[in-house]
Image (cartoon, rainbow, N blue to C red):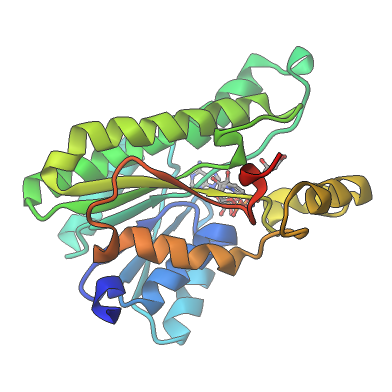
Amino acid sequence: MSALFDLTGKTALVTGSARGLGYCYAEGLAAAGASVVLNDIRAELLDESVQKLRAKGYQAHGVAFDVTDEDAVESAFAALQQQGLPVDILINNAGIQYRKPMVELELEQWQRVIDTNLTSAFIVARAAAKRMIARGNGGKIINIGSLTSQAARPTVAPYTAAKGGIKMLTCAMAAEWAEFNIQTNAIGPGYILTDMNTALIDNKDFDAWVKASNPSKRWGKPEELIGTAVFLSSTASDYINGQIIYVDGGWLAVL
Ligand code: NAP
Ligand code: GCO
């Protein structure tokens, strides 16, 4: 049974993984046997995180690039291939949040969120899938959605539009790439305790709303996302495609 979840011999690229949920995904996949490639914009932070995983005995590498820059993405994939690190598993995790009512939102602010949270998933997955198809060994692509892939709240419109797009882009990738033995799925985390949500965690009213709104009555912990990421990266999910798994304490299951 454990062989179903064994990632030994696989190379996994996790975008935006110097910290936060991305770092958790990278550590979890490394613990399952994968050689992990961390990514971030900030090279110095990225190197610190790579060293942390290496100190734990994991196979970890780092490649700094901006996920919205398609030339940088292509160069990174070419460099990884030359280093003998062809990407077998991709987690499109990098993302930003920008909270403002739509009537006050500048187009540039909208576009930056859409570019980082949605368009980048296309850019990076395209680079991965082209090479997976050429190698003929299949692959795994995991896009990161959100509760906002399914429902909205005020002041996070571009994020919500992007995450809704992630849900359907995941279906589109499954539609085009399943025949090449590439499984593309998504994870929809609930409200998780990371830097992205510091302002919300510190807000007593918002904290109370999160705890009242889901049957688990609490925020999620980053490490609670690892099992789903390993599952969707492994043989255990070879006949699952185009799905989104919400890791939300039951939030979307209740009225
Ligand atoms: P986070 O703590 O803010 O970390 C985001 C990471 O993405 C950072 O390492 C950041 O790099 C990186 N990043 C941002 N823009 C990038 C770019 N253009 N190129 C490369 N890397 C970039 O966020 P998080 O909470 O871990 O969230 C990670 C993902 O999960 C996001 O897609 C988010 O939407 C999603 N998510 C989070 C939650 C939650 O409750 N936390 C729930 C649902 C979904 P720097 O370190 O250089 O800033
Ligand atoms: C917000 C939060 C959410 C969470 C997450 C919920 O401002 O409402 O940032 O977007 O991060 O996406 O699933």
